[in-house]
Image (cartoon, rainbow over all chains, first blue to last red):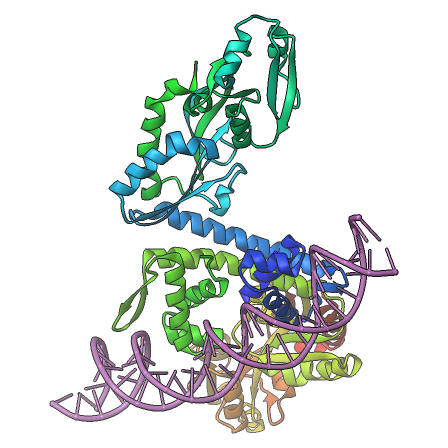
Length: 290
Length: 290
DNA sequence: GTCATGACATGCAGTATTGCATGCCTAATG
DNA sequence: CATTAGGCATGCAATACTGCATGTCATGAC
């Protein structure tokens, strides 16, 4: 008679994921269960929501319509989850943080250590994720991000300005000491794909020796002596085995922001963490610039 | 980790119903199950939603907040249900009608008979309810109502104008034949509580002999000869054993409307029923007025 | 004071839901 | 053409959920 709300949510996840297996994964249940819930929803609504094709479930128009409304229900649920977290004045329970992988060691970890000592009943989860966590979905409560703006719907706090520079193993400093004719090998981040123009001008004998999609790997390669890497100031300074080299003048880079969803922002846990993290960054802002 | 939507709905029903038992009844499950779902929701959200008092569950502030959002989710679900019904072009499945109890026999039943003959795959449910069914909640797809307007958010079709008159057992016609000095006993609908002024003027010896809250019962009393009843024209005419008496001049009364929710209105089943019902009323509109 | 009523907690047994294993089908790959 | 991988259907066993019965507590009626 009356529809089961979880079955509606299951339909939504099938359409989002594109398959029973994907829906099962995102719901944390076996895909068999997903298939049966879909069948139950169809029986309850007296509608065919998916065509069973050999290569998977294809939503019918009715299925899309159901998913659309289920999505609206989910939005309301997420509103709720955020607001509950935002109004929670307790210093206990889960607090989920996310930050750029390579910033965690030198800057975030020490703060977390002090935080858990001060608030032992808070369970801190840290997502070292380079992909942006969806703060509206509460994938994280608070995020440290390197960007030029905090994002439209998010509350943000600019913690520090940043500059980049060129770093390499000490041997490269010696090689460049001979002057502009020195041969400079660059390790380049995938998205840029070529030697920075300013570096090319200063050392005409520059070339790309390696292109890579992962900064941690690039640092490893640089420490091993493969070549020069352009990276944020703080990274080069905090990586043992690297020194700053004159291949490139320091230049300004994206700022460091602390961002959160406005609903979640007032939470006692979030506030307590902010109150430790922000002063840390502010006090150490010199480490991010030349 | 992730909240169960049905548990949220259960919380909503507990707050709406005021008790576990009431919530269980409206959800169609045992109240024990309701209690366990509430406990599960609390565990999942890590929040106390209700205080367990000796005289029942009292919602906490967090509980009210959860219910508020769950209510938003429910609204979205109802939107969906209505729209699915509205877009359904099949002439099969459930069709729920509601109409004033006493109008069903003489006017609605004959139409239903023809309708089910023409569309045998439609399961017609008829709610003979004097309370207004909530069409937004799809308690009914289509309603015949006696009112002065169709309602704000509903689509309406005015099918006929109505008048009321006074009816009684034949003996009362004889008694009144002697003239204005005749003694007239009235059976009065609870809300009015006294003899209509116009009747008092015409027959000064009028009095209330019985007040009642149910028109069917009043008709029974009238047939038994207890007194005179003011009722819609069609009712008096279709009740064997009653005749119109001159205790009161016919006077205009509320119109007869066919109303539905705009979302549901385009449904094939709803349209097919309308197309039979409206001509019936229009053709017989003379039966509602003097 | 006793009794009845309404609301909830809890233990137990039956049932329905779930997950796993197996098998079929299609599409992409070599 | 064989092979692999992704996607789904189905049967069976384990599990989780549900409903029932019984007991406790408070409130209000007699």
